[in-house]
Length: 359
Image (cartoon, rainbow, N blue to C red; front, side, top):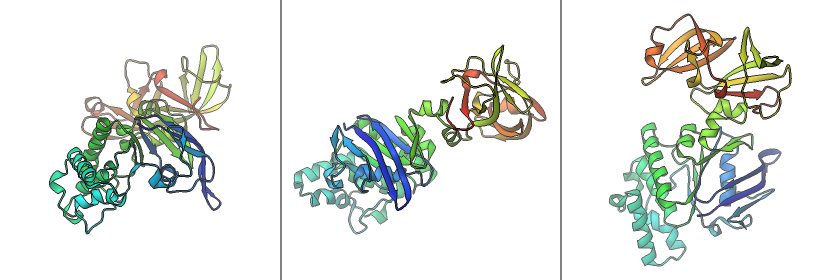
């Protein structure tokens, strides 16, 4: 297994900065996902790790060995691209073996590696077919197999599932996660799909504007977002955000939002909050109770009830803000008009309105 260390990495195209002083460490055997919107720099970061992009600052190390000046072929990585990039005139077997033949690998080793990869990916019946005779999912398996035959311990994936339909993406997610478990190798995976990131990753690096906003486990990213951007980017629907003002009282810290007062007593502030500080309160839809056992904290007007099968989203207007509440279908049945909303302080996320960072 290979660990990857990235130190103060910078990259720009002309006057446009794409990577801004990126530093992160991928532990051996981790499944790290680079997640973010288009243009955030995630594919550029992956290309820099692969050696496909020249660095303009910083360095990259594999197991403490500096590889910043090595060519891609010298880094011993397996890479799977967004496009399958299969040779259309070659069979699956030839596509898998071509890179090994160029590297002058012995015929016996080539046959052994191709057989091993085909068995692992369950594409043995496809070895004598050409790419035009394969489905999208089968082509993606072949593209992964071409990376596997290198027998490396570091694999890079650049949005490999973006060309597949929703059903195939779900199936391939399961297969890729199982592949990581079986290989025990280090995976670095780029996607803009938060579902892929949350289901696959050991840790997620959420990127925005060429910077890493948060690098943490899926659970931490979801439950304790480090910034307003992360809070609004992760989750479907995303975290509800209520602008408010902090106030120090004899009963502890409270927040005023619209005509409502929210007690923040017991919230684990990282730094002591300032009296009168503008903040944003974040709360996940599933952490809001509707007229529950807890005394209602907010009043809201039901806008629309959206059944989703196993649960229901209730969209409400509260303190001049639109919010989503996830609840059981039975509880949502017949909801209308004014309702009470409540939540526990340990389920809140508090952000500075000025910096956007978690308090």
